[in-house]
Every structure is written in C-alpha cells, then in structure tokens.
Length: 139
Ligand SMILES: [Cu+2]
Image (tube, rainbow, N blue to C red; front, side):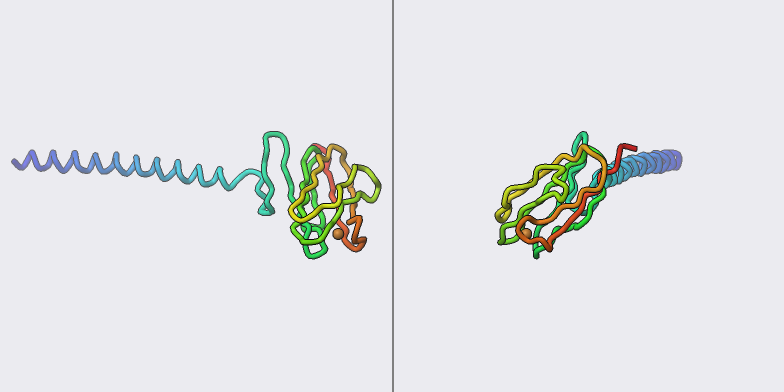
C-alpha cells in the first residue's frame, strides 16, 4: 500500500512536470505569435507591410498633410487619403510624379516611389498645405 501511494505520487509529479512543460510550450507559442504579429512594418501610422514594399498612409485633414514629412525606402508606396470635407489635390513641386486629381472626401491618391531623393509637394488648391517625401536608396 505504501509503495503504491509513493508510486502514485511519483506518477502524479511526473504528470505535473509534463503538464507544466506542455503549458510552457503553449505559453511560448502564444508569445511568439503575439510578437510576430506586432513586428513587421507597422510603424504605428497605419503602415501595412506587403510582400515587396511598405505602404505609408498620409492623411489629408484640417488643411494639412499628416504626417507632413515621410522617410521611406525606395520602392515603397504612399497613399494619401482626403478625410476632410474639402477638395484637396496633391501636386509635386518639381513635377517629378503626376499628381492627383482633385480629391473629394475619402478619395485616395497613391504613388509607388521608385526614385530616391527628397520630393516636396503641396496642395494644388491650398498653397499653404505642404509636405515632403524622402525616398532613401536601397541599403
Ligand atoms: Cu488642400
């Protein structure tokens, strides 16, 4: 009887260890998945990582581009969204890229930036609205 209970306790402690390690594995797996979800190119600014490039978002509201300046890698995409109830139009200061049409509320304009350099732009309707994209060459 004594031997049996000792054996039982031994098995129980073994099972506990196995259970603990199984639990640890589950904890590690969930931690890894949480970490891998929060990594990537989410710069906290609504950026979305795609297979080959990052998409940066610029909000047009309160008669301003937000963020006003962006520093991106060559080949990344920038998407402007007019969230204001006024028309705005993205015009590149140097005419480097073709600008947008007049953007009504919730209309978007996007450019894939494949040339490195600093490209200032402004609103074609409100000249006080300015912004700039710096495209860094591939490292
Ligand atoms: Cu404007």
